Amino acid sequence: MSKESALIAALRALAPHPAARGLADDCAVLDFGTETLILTHDMMVEGVHWLAGQDMADVAWKLVATNLSDLASKGADPVGVLLGFTLGNDDTRFLAGLEQALNTFSVPLLGGDTVSANGPRSLGLTALGRATCRPVPDRRGARRGDGLWLTGPVGAAMLGFEALRDNTGADSLAFRRPVPRLVEGRALAPHVTAMMDVSDGLLIDAARMADASGLTLAIESASVPFPANLPSTRRDEAMRWGDDYELLFTLPSDATPPIPAHRIGHAVEPKGSSVTIDGAVPHGTLGYTHD
Amino acid sequence: MSKESALIAALRALAPHPAARGLADDCAVLDFGTETLILTHDMMVEGVHWLAGQDMADVAWKLVATNLSDLASKGADPVGVLLGFTLGNDDTRFLAGLEQALNTFSVPLLGGDTVSANGPRSLGLTALGRATCRPVPDRRGARRGDGLWLTGPVGAAMLGFEALRDNTGADSLAFRRPVPRLVEGRALAPHVTAMMDVSDGLLIDAARMADASGLTLAIESASVPFPANLPSTRRDEAMRWGDDYELLFTLPSDATPPIPAHRIGHAVEPKGSSVTIDGAVPHGTLGYTHD
Image (cartoon, rainbow over all chains, first blue to last red; front, side, top):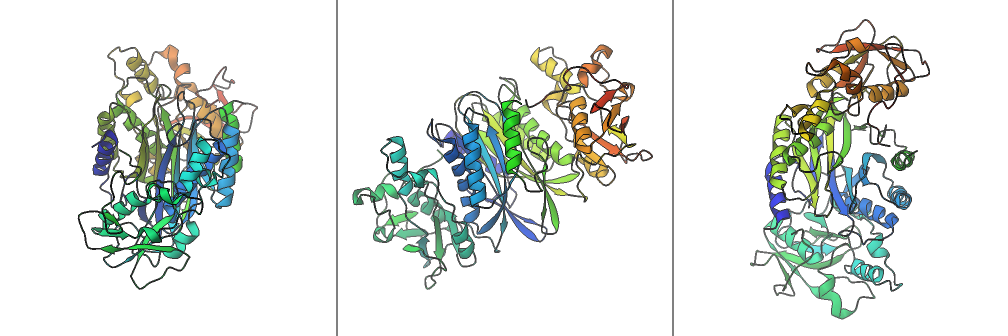
């Protein structure tokens, strides 16, 4: 177990509150008066979560979008965000991107803190949402026989990252400016048996859903949506790359979702592997892990 | 205007939401269903907010305590915290202190995120509370004639910091393990006209309350409580040092607080200086500023 895994495990042990369904990988769900509050906190570090020299407007957008994606996976309406910001030399670009993202998603900045520090900058964002549907969906509810669905293609962020890194001039928006599936999440929440966002890679996130639900998710690769410009030789890779922020969800086998989505497989009894692809156990690393 | 002031001003301009009463110096107050939510986010950076080599158990305690102090100044009951954590070599000490603080103040860890990064570590904590009294007190409500009160001495953290820094063996607990005035804040909230915690120094925080309320706060130095071991020559300094986390509040002139506190002055019409000490304008820097 890596240092980070050990710490997260220790933090989880410190967090027996039923609201803390997960640390670093899920939202807190908290009944508060007559409402249900959804809370998430994600960090981004220079050189780890963004390329050194990347436009800070894109970094700000992504910080907001990734946190809102967590809310989307709960079917929550965003209520506001709190920002933890390390000052740098291009703060005006950060502010410009922050304002764009907050305006685009109609989310107010409620507060936060700024600090000065040397070394790689780190940013934190807490996003607060209001549940629109109870029980609030999570990754634990998939049942045998359920269909497995995905709201959109995986692999676009990978291509965008490569375009940006290699300065090819190709479109990198999918990597720089992900769009949280807030509308889709809200529409899906009353219908799904389980739901989460795909942030670390389709296979690893599907495996997490499978493990949390105590079953195996059988994925049919021919049904998985990919971007049109993805070479067919890279489909396996695209299923292991993250940052696409599509929603992965399960529905009863005879149900269809209220919004456009792709049925990519179904849930079966536990088979020794959390996920299978076309009936086989996937080889190698399933995606980005925090280890 | 410093870079940080400029950024905070820009962030404030981005945050027209009425819940965002301040950034970096106040909590967000948000009606949520039948309840009122109080939110705050503070960061700590290695080498800035704690001494390199300091016991991380103390740092964890302080991170929790300073955020809960913000809730205390609103008379709020803590509901939980979310942690943004940069991994280091002494995480077990951090965890030990975190657990102690959360247990002491009966606050659950709801979630968070951990990252790896090089350079000075930064930590963020979001604290969430429930208002116990509405309207929720803030720093804007002081009225002319009000008495100005303080829950406890200022200067203890300064002495504690020096003991720690100089390794004198003297007691440094006040600096390392501040206690948020949660019980006092809750008892005071229904009675005060204005309230805030003293985090950056008595004089500067009083000046902020005075400015927000549009008046002058006249402090009588002979009434300000100091620790017994503070040399009398250092009282002026102690009023400009922060980290004591006592509550500063105003009450109608004929009112007395429901908990032990010290009446240190009163509010008068604006006199050209936000604060006066024994009738005179204080010289020099009033306390720690984020500039």
